[in-house]
Length: 75
Figure 1 (cartoon, rainbow, N blue to C red):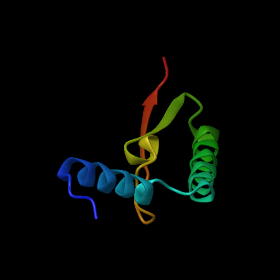
Figure 2 (figure 1 turned 60 degrees about the vertical axis):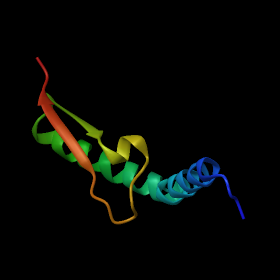
Figure 3 (figure 1 turned 180 degrees about the vertical axis):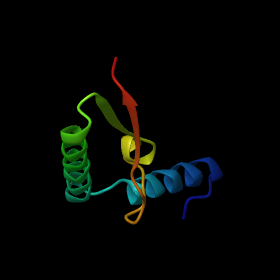
Figure 4 (figure 1 turned 180 degrees about the horizontal axis):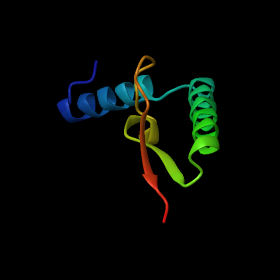
């Protein structure tokens, strides 16, 4: 048992990060879905840029989390 509260908190943060961090195949599936969506949108709107942000970009999301995307017009 760890008695030092700082060390305990540190270990709990590490455990939470490991839990939230997606497995490699989970991340790849989401990445493929994003790239496919971008490809489809670019057919109709080639002057639009689309980027993921939020929890997907930080790789800290729950398995059922959504994917945040932003789109903007290129000059």
